[in-house]
Length: 192
Image: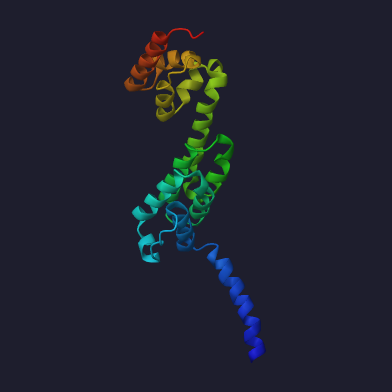
């Protein structure tokens, strides 16, 4: 009997270890310790509140040293809209080349929006190099969010795209914002 229980313990210990890899409260406690230092992490019950988890995720997003633990927690997060919101937040804070690891952390059922936002952020990232390469049809196909973000740009190299948005932006707000951006660029004058 003793030999059987000795054999069972390692298997159970191994199972417990594998189970803890998917244990959201353990991941949240590790993330909380990284974000808040030596303060005692709250008990499991407080992690049941999505608002408490969002606050922890938001604070972790502000600390690059906690990003790996944050990604680990997102993989275990069972609340799809919450995990999607965290990923979209992180897409704004990470290089485009790293977006794939964040979007892949999401359940496929909630991944579509984050993937679309990643593509839009890649367009924003490319504007400094390729603004003149975007035509009216392509700019017209951009989402309202992307058109507005570009319209808010004050970079001189974005003038061509800003002119397209000032004349053909999907909403009055986008057209007005692009016009204001063009005026600001004009006031700045050429840079030597």
